[in-house]
Length: 382
Ligand SMILES: Cc1cc2nc3c(=O)[nH]c(=O)nc-3n(C[C@H](O)[C@H](O)[C@H](O)COP(=O)(O)OP(=O)(O)OC[C@H]3O[C@@H](n4cnc5c(N)ncnc54)[C@H](O)[C@@H]3O)c2cc1C
Image (tube, rainbow, N blue to C red; front, side):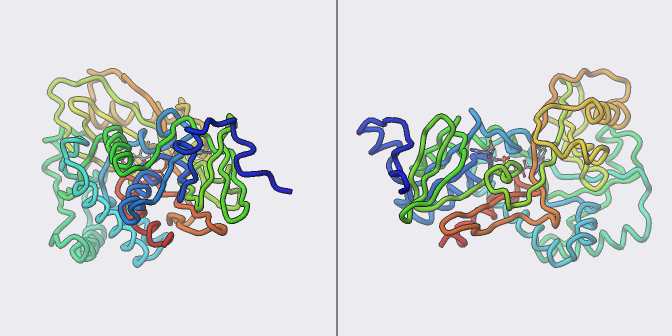
């Protein structure tokens, strides 16, 4: 005999049972970018649908508020690597989604509200340009023309290396379409947006599992709370295997450092280096630098949000060598966030069980991808 859906819940008052814990149409697990964009899309396209988001952290506790805030669709070496890994068609598909996602962010939110800056994106190289790579960049430009309408997305900009105060690089490519934003403000704006659309968002609600019974799903949270829903959407990214053991999403820790303010800082824009494994930008007059995961892939395959000596010193060396030689700065903040990766770099959007769906693994590209993943989830759940 299965227990009544509310049996395992706390003893709720009549008011609680008919409000906060009223049966839902859709429960979403995880309030990162994917969970929030999905909630927004579902609420807009199905007015009147009762949607609740359950987030284990006090605030989102994965990648979304701990990233670099690049609104980008891929640097040349990153895209060429993806061609080798995925093939050209699949690479273009993801680029198109990222490009459309970038457009959507600024259509939905006032740029000032989320500190969106059309700063331009850059990729820097220690080697001078050569004919083979230049031809590959031209090929990328042709494909990007179809997607963005821009004739030359990637342009050589070596002369700007000095303008930005960069050292130890021989060449650079500029992409005027990229920029950056404030990840904390974007998440806050999304939370406000979904709440205005009638979505309930609970923080500190760590889901421990769920059970299906009589055509309903009972979603259980640590602490004894439980919610009844028609359908469930899992947006737990790198933490998915804890809830769905059959789904393979590998964690990848991304570490970041932020310098003290540097008077007269010349760096302006969103920069990529080494196939996108290093990324840096200005945050006002400070330098934010993240990455170096390629220096220790295995140790960074973790869900621990600590920082590590090896990566932190690789990042510090990079700032001291390439961005601020002379050492007139201190490191004021260090943090890490956990990304979710699949072997084939594809996000996983699937129905995994009767009434249970997952949307996970942006493979380190979620700022731009999440708005479009949400559109696809909405179609999938139709
Ligand atoms: C250092 C770093 C730099 C990055 N830089 C960029 C960048 O510049 N541009 C870019 O596009 N992308 C970047 N990314 C990647 C981007 O941040 C992610 O792709 C995106 O945030 C993923 O969103 P998500 O919602 O899938 O995952 P998350 O933000 O990880 O959200 C998943 C949520 O699920 C919650 N959760 C997990 N388990 C449970 C449970 N059992 N119960 C309830 N809640 C649960 C977690 O607490 C978390 O809040 C970066 C990531 C990192 C870490």
